[in-house]
Picture 1: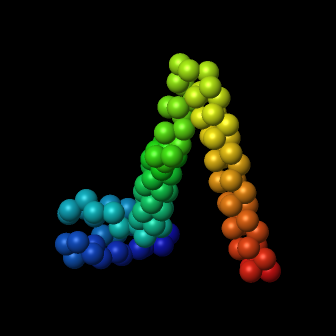
Picture 2: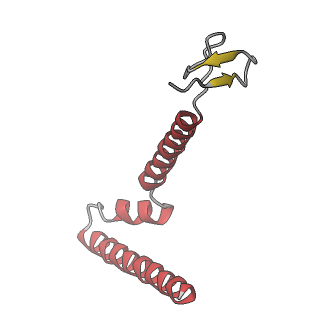
Length: 105
């Protein structure tokens, strides 16, 4: 049986085969610390992605509101404008990704 003496970085107590400090209850296992930090960063990243996905641009909001107008002519104009806007957004995004892919090799 291997005895592992670990000194607590928080209080300096020497612990034998413990995951947590017997004095201050701080986490001593380095692998568990890294896993907890990685999971916390992943959760923060997911929250940021969800927040950015929920917020449409001002142009999108304007075109969506216009596409719900009660006048048929205005509604048709705004719907066509929205689809043109989305097409241009995808075209520009595709162009940028092609340039990045070409630069990466």
